[in-house]
Image (cartoon, rainbow over all chains, first blue to last red; front, side):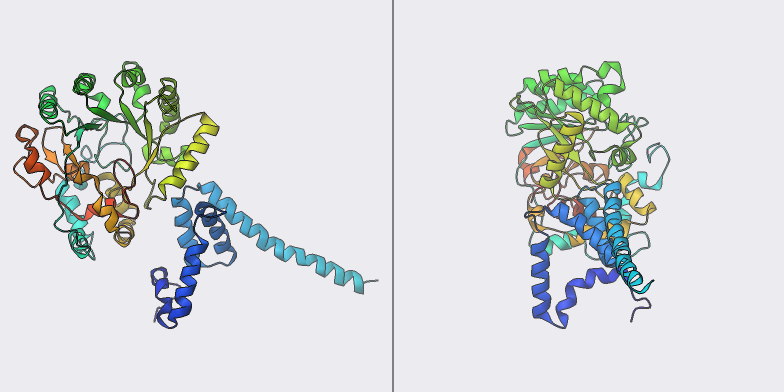
Length: 111
Length: 349
């Protein structure tokens, strides 16, 4: 067993996830491969979206993978950081917008 | 910044580089050697197919000292091809019609005092001449200012490094001020007709990663380069060649110093592509060093790995022997076979 919950070397083992359930693993990777192909959005654009989502879901493996991938695909440092700010804004906004619910409740019970 | 050689750095020695490529920093052998990888994909022995291109390195002197340079070139390098050795190249080229392309590289090839004479003689022989121009040389001194016109006059194909379409990444790799000077030089080349549709004068750019990562898809990057350079600087070019950084010389030094060497080699090995191996440039190109010795490629030249046949010098050129030679390979060759592959003309698979 690893001494840490996250080990960067585990990212390279992701492809082995089908070891315990091959059919679902194969289907997932086939789907994953299709998603990231050039289509209505380019693979380059999808890489930046993936980076933002990786930060939103706070997956260290995904952050490693898509920081490299997006940088390789020619996004600049400032563009990468702006994508992370989009994730942060949405996460922050997601908390803050619930403030409306809080206000609704308080207004309902307050004199 | 001084060259590794001027610093008396251990990596200025080709043997020290080869030892690291074989055994890493700590004596741990590479997981699988390039030779074994070729064998696994039924590609060994690895032989030349033909020779249609002579890539001539006419000197290690350069006005820049780029951090990734596999030549360890710079202003402090004095190795320069003499007119006598150039004449030997011309004699071979005159006698062999099948050698149709001459690819001039350096250093900054223009800094060789016999550069212009050599180009004139090559075009007189009817050869297609490529010059790997670092762009900033055009602005480095008044005596180089007419290079765009000189290139146009001799129908030279210009291939120029521009590692990124923005200043930060370019300057970090090639030195402060290089991006702005490169943009200015590209505009001068455009003004001379280079890169313009229908002009027939080719201006190709080279992208190589500014760090320990592999290049991305050539087509997508070319599209972005074209959009950005056109919108921001009104620059036109023909093609973008995407090149992988070889783990040798200054880039090897960077990898070791930044702690990226092992992971970079793992990436290269993991991305090995047999289709790229089938099309690497050493199979149809021969590299000539500044002193006339022959190599399978410019990288082998810097690692002092001469061709594996009797014709080891341009004066001993034997076309038949050379085109049937077995190519000398090493673990640095993973750099040319990763992903879509890499050559001086960009991706190959």
